[in-house]
Length: 247
Image 1: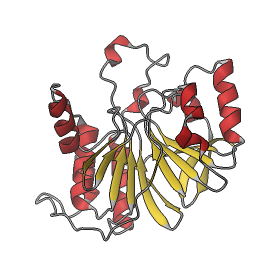
Image 2: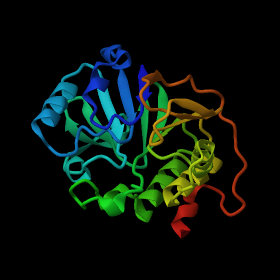
Image 3: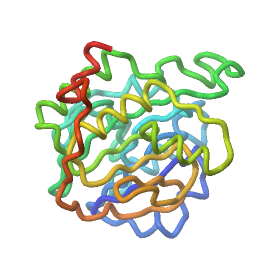
């Protein structure tokens, strides 16, 4: 069974939650960014890594804006369920950007990263990593991989949401709108691809936003059975997600 949850931020209490404790042998838990247990390399973090690596279920995460990318990117790169991962240790893995994984009979497109709104107040390579913002090359590679899959996947897993979803959530809270190029990239992917459901973190809320978009935070939820994908209207400026090659 595949489960998803949101930003854990290195919170030890999350490891004792009811949702986490129900995971069993063969399950896969996907964390939608801001995993947080790989950050400053202290003794507690090393113990958590050892603990998760030795579980009978797999903990897999995409990165957000509170993950030490220097450490994560030093992990051994290998293939897992058809896509590339950093094998942190044992059953703890990082799902790399723009990959498609076949898990439990379903396809998952993963793309981590984001943009810290407080990056001007952080210290580079101390509590902020420039690589948190995906490069144009990474976005182009992700688009190519979707093209190769016929622009059709069952699930999309990201840290940030598409721009329209993010704008709606922020405006509902009364916050100023603040979308970035990654949100725009995801918006175009959503318009160009067939997918059943999109799970994302970042905004610290457990809520179904639209029929096909769910924001996850503290809850550990099973992925919904894939419905027959609905073909969205394509952008007039592009025939597929490959538009990013000209961005």
